[in-house]
Length: 421
Image (cartoon, rainbow, N blue to C red; front, side, top):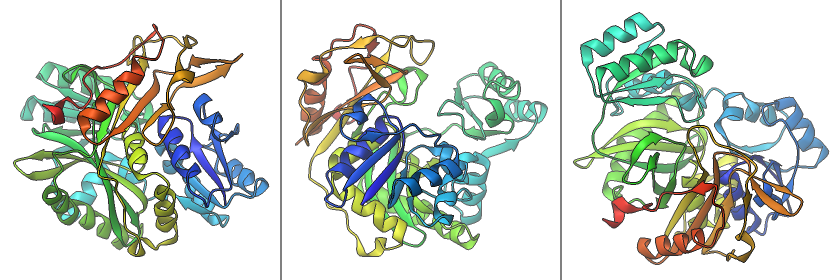
């Protein structure tokens, strides 16, 4: 099969790495890709937000299957364009992608099926939003309703911070994403990520992970797109995972089908867990980044078979075969991230690191130039390893980190600390 992956980050590099191991894959193209992806697959210049251009590319390159990595093209309906042209696609429709594209829509779905989540208010103007904050009090969570590249959530610990966040959003800090705002109860507990596949009817769990969103060690400092992750997440026990399926995910999927927008793709449920009770924090309609990297390390070649079954509506015939091990990824980011950072610094030492089923460096923001690998983003590398225990996976990942010569980059040194402590 000729397979196309849309995207350019560490998530897409790990997807490409897994797909390339499957014997069904004859040719793999990633658009636009990055320097790491270019070492294992063909990269192509393509506007992945332009559905018509993607369809034309697929027709010209005899593509059999398309995997859409990021949320933006899903929310723009690129998957719909491809399906209308007769292509098999992994990724939900534009209508179903509203589960991530609109936080208010997700709350509406949860309300309709009594799925446990945070109490909330939905606002289209600053005056009423400020009044709600003043009534509820801090701590409280202020969220831009739309897609804000993972940056539209502010956890305000004081009333002043919350009111400033409301003003910031309605003043356009997050563009159109902040034209509407959802304000939520601050939920206490431990957060974890639960990943399932859904083909419109069948829901199949494929793994758990825990992300480290804050930039500093001990989960301190501002939120980022993710500074590291590990899988599985011990806090998501089999019992709690089953509760999440029965009380949250399956009811929401049934409600989506009832509304004529059946969900078909990977669903990433962010859950807050306290006293054995999971509550939904948010849905994402694609693999998490960097959670995808640890999931792909553990799934390997079967990942493509599962994605194909999702697209064809045959998940009921599938089962997930897990290796009884752990995976951990450490994000190396450019100095200054998540604030201002510089591009173009050279990263050395990558060629000396192992690349196998237990050790991989997935590129997130890199470019190749004159034989050198240069940093080309905020989050730049995902240094990933497997081990029989989480401690072993952590040790292997940091051993690789220590082999990378990049003074202009940094990482957290405590990825996995919650589970290991």
